[in-house]
Length: 145
Image (cartoon, rainbow, N blue to C red; front, side):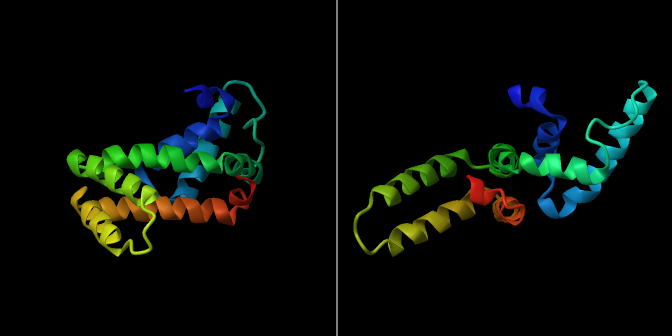
């Protein structure tokens, strides 16, 4: 919640990650910025504290790394339906990390099988997470992490 006090764009990231991947966010951001601008004007301000849409998007991009934890946190609870499989997956990933053998194919197959059991739409969630990473890479933020 501390992030909510830093900038409203962090709130945008949090809300958008509950329901959308990056491909569908731009229209939502335009709507958010227009509503913010209109509200600020009704309150007697000259407009959005971010200025025009370009400045708003620049501010939004500064907080792009937040997409990963927000997205992961929201998507897990939305798409994972079998939490026993989730616990098993965590164990398998630890085992993979600690495995020193060169043949990890059996572990890899077990991990994929376990992911399949997480829920019927889990691969959609994974795709959305990859889209988040691609977006922050495209924004140049990934190089700064």
